[in-house]
Image (cartoon, rainbow, N blue to C red):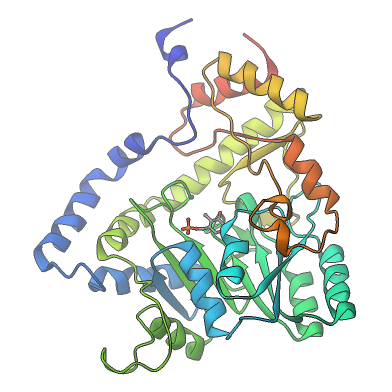
Length: 380
Ligand SMILES: *Cc1c(COP(=O)(O)O)cnc(C)c1O
């Protein structure tokens, strides 16, 4: 074994990425140090315009995190006690946390066994169940673009329209992905983004944004992210939050936007190599038809918990990281189980026992990718 083969292969390589953008980043950060407008400085608006233009949305509102983005959007709709918010059981905790913080009730929906995205058939069943019980008002659907791929947006829109419910997209993992040749960001009334450092477009701290084509909602989001302010800072129109995006994070994200398309292309290349390379040992992730993934996370399926543990051990012995997204579906989490109606969501439960993510980020060199494939297949 060569010494490079001993180097651990992790889930992220932020130092290597920083070298790529270092000069551009330094110029942008120096400019912030000069004007010292650390809150709502000019970089925030520049970033908002750039993100909106990237997806063709009418407006973008920068906020402090992906979680706060969801909260601002749901607050704008007045969602609260007595309201049911439908969301996949197989997603990151933030999606379910926000409805509860606002006093609403998350209703967990099962996912597709192949693409891992929210299952429209399960959604229809869950809405019918809540209507039949008559205890909660079905108010909103949160479609999550999981792991970099799009949720089934045409079906979700049809359901939201028929049921007269608000539809939002939690696109925290999938900025840069596209469906039917169109970049994600305009599939629902509002789309939330996260720039947590490990996402495909990552800041150097917490940051997020909201995309919308509705100018009135965009104004409401701007007010809500800044204490519900009106035309002037000391006019308070509504109860809001402090959910502003830091100028420094906006400057970092502007530098990262310059390399986003290159990063996405590299992620797609690596995913193609994995697809062909690991199929003899595991089931590669199924593609959502007519889409391009942002490849935030590349998750394969093993045969079961023992098989997955064995594979993780085999990879670890070769110094290759792996991770489980998500080891427990949300309806079985201690915090959320008391709010769940007890229905089994079999696909989410099965996936949590079998799924395993391989390292996939733009800084992986060709020989790193080959090492990951060899580690999965147990080759030397
Ligand atoms: C990361 C993530 C969030 C939360 O974003 P933060 O910026 O960490 O608050 C929400 N939903 C999903 C699906 C995520 O992956």
